[in-house]
Amino acid sequence: MIRSVVVRAAKGRVSEDAAVFLAYRETKRLSPVASRLDGTFDGAAAALLASGTFRGERGETRTVSLKRGRRFVHAVLVGLGARAQSNAENVADALGFAGRALQSLRVDTAAIVVDEAIAKEAAISIALFAHAATKGFILATHDPTVSKTSSSIRRLAILSDLPTRTISAPVRRAHTACDLIGRVRDWVNEPANLMGPARLADACRKLCAEFEVGCRVWNRADIERARMGAVLAVASGSREEPRFVVAHYNLEKKSLPLVCLVGKGVTFDSGGISIKPWEKMHEMKGDMAGGAAVVAAIAAAASLELPIRVVALVPCVENMPGGAALRPGDVLTTCSGKTIEVLTTDAEGRLILADAVAYARAHYRPDVIVDVATLTGGVVVALGTRVAGMLGTSETHLDAMRSAGERAGEPVWALPLDEHYFAMVKGEISDYKNYAGRNASPITGGAMIGAFAESTPWVHIDIAGTAWNEGVGPSYQTRGATGYGVDLLLRFLEIVAESR
Ligand code: BES
Ligand code: ZN
Ligand code: MN
Image 1 (cartoon, protein in one colour):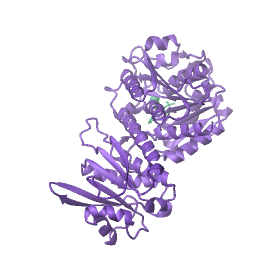
Image 2: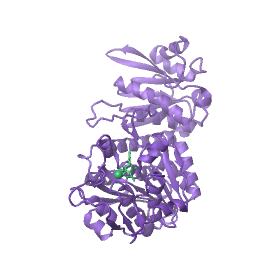
Image 3: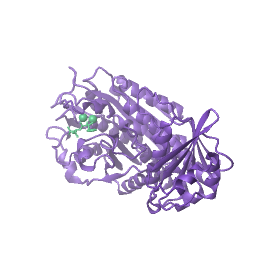
Image 4: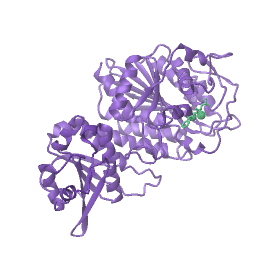
């Protein structure tokens, strides 16, 4: 991940190894500001633009490399597509191509020219443009390999003639979000032999320490004391002991709104005794993507000093079919005292989240609980890999989350939820059952979790489709984990903080 990101006045020569110049389909020539900087490259970008061979399609990328003494410098011209369609998502996608190009050239330092002329033409504000450009570029340079072999860009400069104060805040926000998205990607890509419940909890603790967020990690004895029977039951089939991560930001500032974020932290989901078929089982190392996202979001909120209180809770377990594993037919008692009959051990996410959500409600009495989980295969069938499923009991918070998704380029789509669906998960011999048939499975799965929020406003995000990119995502998504949810939650927290 890029260490340092700076905003600098677009004056003099470009001192970085490479500069990215931007052009819309409608752009005929570089602005005076850009063309002065292009002087560093003997006018290479202007020449490309004038050649008529560059059409300005979104992501269209041309590079001219020039020898300067013993090293090379590169002028990169990148298309933004049609001016009218230059929304945040498309700007980020265009800059993702630039990031990829410069990553493969192995440059040490890079610059993006975000001049007023280009930013003003966009269909979004200058601040959003700068944010999207920075985000797309940085995320595309993320190295998804476990070994992290490719050398990464060390420093990124945003060169601009805009007043620094109008773009430095959005650029800083983008850098923070990307840093945390990168960490989530790393955790989610990490194989389950290297990232079990204890390691995940440890990673959460370290991240919290770095961002000055209070964090406690409960071990099994602590979880027993809290009577979280569902968390313990799911963990019981694995050699790996469970953990429960409790992170606090601003908790002492009682006048601020309180949001509880709850994330699914299943470090590997074999299905348990109701074991999964082998074909895609390896992808289940990413079944802790929700847990990673909520901890990254609380760290981001702290880094940006948002005026809001946040609690992040992550039950960390491995779902395995060991000799002590929970069985289909078992009845579990959650920390709320309510019971759940296990009809399939593969619907484990809702079990551990029932305990965590019940604890969030009873212990913190928050203004809203948001749970984030790779919960169902059904949501992937319904919505695919670009849009997450959403459910909830509070229209205002659902609206806030919908706006957050649009702003973040991490869209959510609300599924219907009423008494009828809650009735489907009522148990026959217990309060609830963890499986209600294939019909509407993303809704019944979510509803079972929501029942434990009781009257506390609650929103559920099912990221089973969006947490993982199989190659159809935008240019700034690398293969595998996407880091989906971090920017969405951060935008959501910003909206709740603003509306207090
Ligand atoms: N972790 C899975 C859901 C999942 C599927 C995540 C595909 C990512 C990609 C979850 O625990 C699960 O197994 N869900 C089952 C529930 C069913 C047995 C009620 C599902 O949706 O198939
Ligand atoms: Zn799962
Ligand atoms: Mn499962």
